[in-house]
Every structure is written in C-alpha cells, then in structure tokens.
Length: 483
Image 1 (cartoon, rainbow, N blue to C red):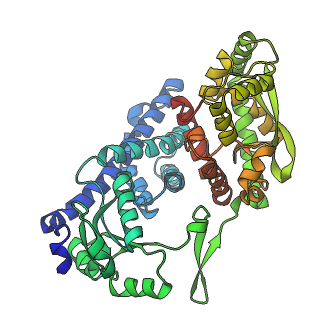
Image 2: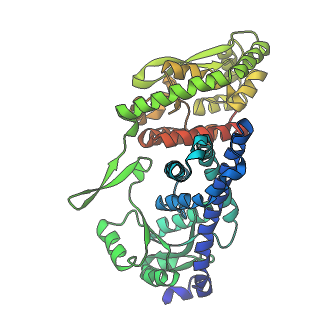
Image 3: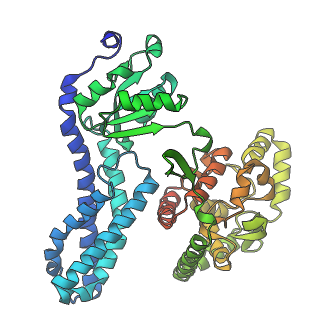
C-alpha cells in the first residue's frame, strides 16, 4: 500500500488488543453506573432508617439483584458505552432511563413483596440521588479513564484534508468523548502534502474497508462537509459499508447550533428544525415547574436572604435591592432585582474611571463587564463571585417576568449585538440561570453567548433545565468565569 511507506505504519498488534479495549471502555462506564446506583440505594435506605426505622437496612438486601433492571434499561437507551453523546443529551437519557427503571422496580416490589412497598419513600430518594450520582460518577470515570492507553472506541476518520485533520485534532484533544482516532483516510490528492500524525495510521479512503475488517466494531467519522451528496453516498456504499457506526459531518455550519431531526419526505432526507420552547404546552409546563421550585427555594433559604440583606446594608449607604431595566418576552421591559453590589451613584463613578482609563473603556465597550469594577463594594464582590446577588430574582420568577432557566436578560444596548438571534430571544422568558452561566460565563465571547441562547430556545426540555440547574450549583461553588 503506497501510503503506508510515507505515513505511520498500521499496528496490527494494537488492532488485536482493540477488542479488549472496547470491553474495558464499556466496563468503565458500567462500573461507574454500578457504583452510583449502589451508593444511591444505600444512601436512600440509611436516610429512611434515620428518620423512620420501620425497616432495617438488611430488609432491602433482597432488592440488590434488581440492579440488572437498570443495566437493561440503560443499555436500551444507548447509554453503553455512551459514545459521542453530549452531556445534556446523556443527562436526558439518564433521567428517562432511571425513571423507567424505578417504576419497574416499584411495580415488581408491589407484586413480590407488598409489605415493603409502604416504604416507597426509599425508592423516591434513590431516584433523586441516582440522577445526581450517575452523571457525576460517569464524568469522573471518563476523566480518569481518558488518561489510560486502553480508553476509547477505535475510530477511523474519512474526509477531506482540512476537515479530516480538524476532526483528528478535536478527538485527540477531547479524549472524554470516547472516540479514539486510529486512522485518518484522505483523498489521494491530499496525501503528498500530509505529515505523519503520530501513532495514527494515515492512508487513502480506499483503505477504509480493510480497517473495518481488522478492527471489527469501530466507528467511522465521515468529515467531508464540502463534498456533494453523490460523493458522500458513493463513499458510504463503497468504502464504509462494513462499519456498524457511521457519523457524517454535513455541510450545516450555518445552523450548527439548531436542534434538527432527520425526517423522510418521499425518500429524501430532510432536517426538521426544532422550536420547542415557542409552543404553548412546553411554556405552561415550564411555568408550573418554575413556580413550584422558586416558591419552595425562597421559603427554604429565607434565613440566608436575611443575612445577605444585613451584609449589603452594612457594606455601604443606600438601598438593599437594585432594579435594572431589562428586555423580556415580547420585547417587554421589566426590572431585574438584585442585591445591591455597587456604591450609590455608580454611573458617575464608572464614567469618571472610563474617561481616565482607555483600556478600561475598551473592555467595557466590548463586553459591558469589568474584571476590576471600581463601583463594586466589598459585600458586592462576594455576592458577585458566588452569584448570590441574583437571589432576589426568585421574585421575578414568581411574578412571571423571568424563568429559573432561560436566555440571559439583556439591556437595550445589547439588542444590536444579538442581530437576528434577538427575534428568537424575545419569544421566550429570560432566565435566572442558563447555558451561558454554566458555559464559562464572562470567559465566553459575546458571539458565543448569543448562539448559546439560541441553542437553548430551540433545544429546550425539562431534563435540560434540570441539568442546567445542577450545573449552576457547580459553577457557583467553583466561581467559574465569575467576577
């Protein structure tokens, strides 16, 4: 084979061990789930025993074999090995699979052992703990396993030179995805310009079927976004027919953040663009969820709110709360309430500093944020770093001006920066937290913020909201991107 003398040689010894590596990759995820589910069950039983010792912990040992139900349901939802799945989509699948598994478990316990069914609070607690522990354990397992040489499913990249190399770099730089590149196959015209890619075999597209036969159950990534449909179809039929899993990177860069679903129109592939959060039923469901959670949280944290009120009052003279006009749904103005984190007369203070410092003025004009804001009080710095200054927005949620999760509320001067995305923005209610807050917050570019908001509107689901709320606690705890 002409290409093997120029590029990295094909390591058949490595191929022979790939089967073991695939099972070890799947086993790592299964082991993480086993630990998470066992921990969730044990913690639920102990909590129940502490508060109401009607049943002893040993009374639940007979339910241990039921963990097979979870593995069967998780496998049915494609969670093993869970390759090339976004964290949000994986969380949605985990939420659904866990709910179905616990419903099956509760149903079976009713018929097999009716007496213990009266302690169904254990199953409820275990379900709540499982949807938290399973994603966390999976994330930890992937983080540790991605450092091991056996991690990942063998992946063959078939593509144009630029797209193929870009995909190779992406997979190498993000080993947690679980796609381990083993070969890069390019058009014959690109081969003379290629350089060796380390331990990745480089060859021609005609080598694809040979690699599929050698590796067995592996993935193929077809990265040819600029090739015509006839060329892509020909490669799928002639060179990628032996692959069980094929991921095609289409020429959809202009709508890469939009939720799409494959549809068939008289045998022709069509992509349905999602608009989930603009329908009445999802909005009603989301509003009910917002009210239930915000009222409950406001009652539970009322002592914390009183302490923060005192801190703001002592930090500098002025009111405790600060309201700022923002743009909401249907382009309506409303006041976003926060704990006051700045001195009184902050606009004058800001103007004087911007006039005196050109670099500071450039930073403000670019992001409408300052890393070292001279207006912020000592209490305000703590509140902003922990995002506790936004707790009064629970009142905005109760009043219906905001949602717990949604696009970040913007001011009038930001409308121009949103461009065409603003039309999508004003169709929904802005949120206290959202994808932007858990995606780097102030460390992201403004263009990325707008695309994140657009993505959320088109891809909304209850599981996505729950995922964002869970991630918000992590973001606040580690102060990711906050200043």
